[in-house]
Length: 253
Image (cartoon, rainbow, N blue to C red):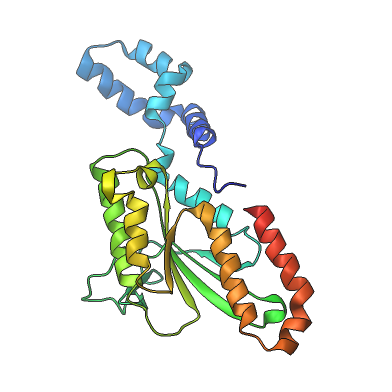
């Protein structure tokens, strides 16, 4: 499938249609705009109600509605082998954070400077529930260069640093998901921003940095590691189901 499809044209159209469906919601603003500019209220109101460009101007930007994160979430939870997928709360008592390789609740992070809250959590499970591994992810989709884009990279870098502090054996994986042109762009001898994240993540075998498109291969590799750790009898018991699962993951990717 080549990873999530981040085309937001459909989301823009939904928001533009909402402007058309609820024109009175902006009538007061249009009146103020007419008074401020000296333009005709009737002309402005007509354009607002009928012109696509005007409607697009007043429509909510899907990027400010976490559209990229929602698209990634829908794509990840459909990867074969993924169970119990959660799009985590961004704040409040149910938000989760990572600090020095540990998962903290909102109450547990009081007084600690952690990265921003985790975005996604899910489990991967071998057939017949023989083994389970938990994943925690921070996700960013970042387009062209700029100040806000650099801030997004800084957030992802902070997460990767704290996650890579995990060094002891646990059935946990932390993943920095870096999607968009910003992370792929080569920057001289330093490589890309994704390369920089990977250099940090590689300090721990429990942490990885990648694009969402690369996630199915990562999940397949983790499942294979879990399978290899089973006894020969248990491997034989689930071999056929395991092979079919790995094939479905490769087909999805």
